[in-house]
Image 1 (cartoon, rainbow, N blue to C red):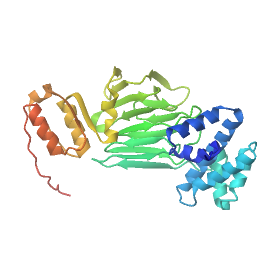
Image 2: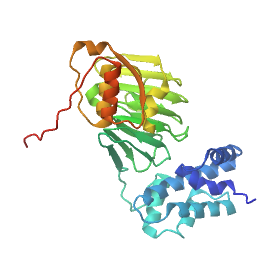
Image 3: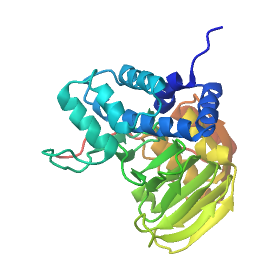
Image 4: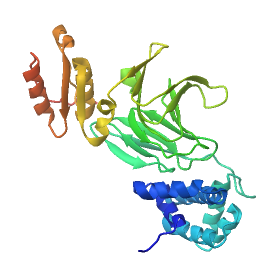
Amino acid sequence: MKIIKTEKLLPSYFKGVLDKDDREKVEIWKEASKVNRQIFADSHKAWEAIEHLRRMKKYNAQKALEKVNHRIERKKSLKLFTILQKVAAILILPLLVATFYFATKTPISKVVKTEIAWNTIKTPAGMRSEFLLPDSTKVYLNSKTTLSYPVAFTGSSRNVKLIGEAYFEVAHNKKQPFIVNTGKINIEVTGTEFKASNYPDEELTEIVLASGNINLFQGAYSKERKIIRSMVPGEKATCYEKENKIYFDKVDVEKYISWKDGILMFRDDSMQDVVRRLNRWFNVDIRLTGEKLTDYVYTATFEDESLIQILDLLKMSAPIDYSIKPRKRKPN
């Protein structure tokens, strides 16, 4: 049987494509000694720099980091500066200058210091998407969602900005907390899974923790930040825009995160909530008429049903009817 040395798994680990067994193998190896932790940290810095340059489509980041780690294996006591000198054998000089800057966070002489650029990803109405952030954090975006993040996570924290709804599977890093700015409430994590939403038209911020733990706070991420409290798995935090109070409840987590798997789930939800989520899911404008409808709650799970099928099922479970009006082009 061919034995794969743990160092060779690092590029795939940072990329987030390892299976559970190999990922655990890397984490056990990392914690086994101080030398291993240094190799891991140096490799991660090099990977972040190479990953940033990969976005420019200049070279193959995977092969570059594998060559870096090959040299680390030959002489594990090499410091970061020596590692980057080795990378010079692969990269042309301009790329080496950029790599050194992002890996050490210290500008080389004659290099103009500029702020890290940010990317913005938007998911159109009626669609959902998923992708990996530079630190291998996996993010699922729901309909009508915008997420902004830096092309490289530098400094003491990993900061992103959310408008809409997203589910995060955060890559573990205690030394560089992951910060989600939702506006009224901000979230601090080091490695866990949770969903957050703050659609402006709903005037509501909602956070549901699936595993691990997270800290809620207000203000900028600094020593002066106003810490609200920590959350435990299975807990939901709700904050209405017009109130200065946060409500915490124990909930069925699956109901709030099933959308990432293409499943629309309702559990004793009011008709107002059902309509709100259907509007977002199908990119339509359903309006309720009649006060009696507000008294009904609905429980169901949909995966491949069309909007018409769902509306027909609603008719069967509640005394309602519906009509569809064709879209009209507005002036200008």
